[in-house]
Amino acid sequence: MTTHRTFSVILLFLLSTIAHAQSTAPSANIDLKFTFSPTIQPGFTHVSPGDVYSPQAGYGFDLGSKVAISDFVTGKNNRPFFFSAKVPPGEYLVTVSFGDPASESIATVKSETRRLMIESLHVPAGQSISRSFLVHIRVPQIPGDGMVSLKPRERDPILFIQWDPAVKDFLPFTELDWDEKMTLEFSGEHPALTSIEIATADHPITVYLIGDSTVTDQMMGPWAAWGQMLPRWFNPPVLIANYAESGETTASFISEHRWAKLLSEIHPGDYVLMQFGINDQRMPVAQFKNYFLRFIKDTRDHGATPVLVTSQNLRRLSPDGKAVQTLRDFPDAMRQAAQEQNCALIDLNAMSMKFYEALGPEKLPKAFVDGTHQDDYGAYELAKCVVNGILENKLPFAQYLSADWKPFDPANPDPMEDFHLPPDPQLDPARPGGPGAPNGQGPMAGAPLRPASRATTSPTTR
Image 1: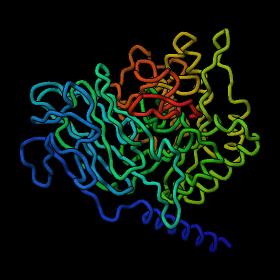
Image 2 (image 1 turned 180 degrees about the vertical axis):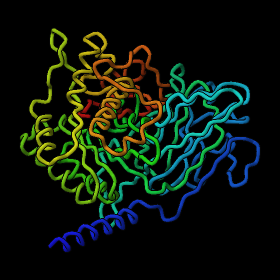
Image 3 (image 1 turned 90 degrees about the vertical axis):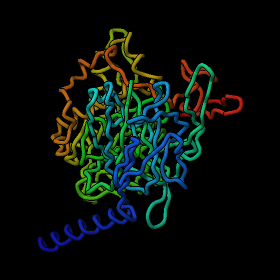
Image 4 (image 1 turned 45 degrees about the vertical axis):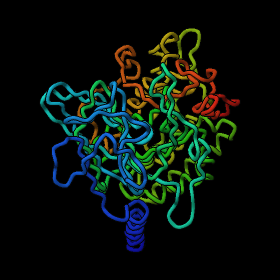
């Protein structure tokens, strides 16, 4: 019996590895190198300001970027710029280099839909620094026969890059997480980008995220979620693959084939961080718990490690400044499932309540866009709570934390006034400070924004 069980485990490992190779590996190894310096470099493709991305060209500046190139590339008028390269779905190691011979370079880098990769990298004048990170590229197709049922906001959104609010100069773009290309955003006071290298990643440790709008890669500011902030804190070989999506429940994540898509990629040694609960409130708690039993079993059957993450609390404080539980018994159901299944648990619900209390009634609304969703600061701090949970659970991939990670206490969060990320040009025009629509309506609130009139329809659930 023991021999038979051992053989079964080995066979499962081999089948999972083969499935992973078939479903995620590009048809050929990718090795793309782009330089923005006029100096010819062997093996590099020289990029000029007029090289605009198209599927036919396969690379170029994207989303209406206006750039200037000397020994490096930077955005005109100090604005963010985008560069895209056509690549098949898979896992990629990206290396970016920065440096200006005459002045300091300061760069922030995001990938795909606003995933934070590098935060405020300072490069002294006359020096050059390179940094590497991993990017996950996906398409809706599932190997074999299947397709993720994308929401309208994913499939055909009406979104905008806002380049110049003074003249209301909007440029439409589509959702960046499910397309045929890798898109990188460069911002900061002076990025001074000199080169980009993109290569097929060699056996990364993939940390998959599943959940709802409080985890997803939010498409436009000021909306943000902890899942798109998490990559900032990990170095290769750790890859964060964010499959969370707005409006999802435990049930819909399965019925829309998102779980099947993830399982077509996952392989032994990976992790799945799973957070639901906010949108599941109409379901019986016992049914909610049972979905996690399935997620846990499926993850383990593929040789990967499940990690339950209790949902962050909604924005609510009592009159005396204490956090009020807004998710009823649902966090407890996840705690019970984790205990019964001997599964790692990150109690983000409890940590978020400490964080909210520490901010207090005056500052707490400034960490949110509405009663549920965070802005950059709130999402950034909750991502640090999740990192805390990873460390507390002693998950092995914690050894690849960024070197500048410092101990974090949600009861003593980073001062809000000291926090700064360069604003994204992907801005929801419906929110305060954005022209064109009443507050509370617009693309990120669920209502389409028509380019011709900037008119909106009634908002729907996020």
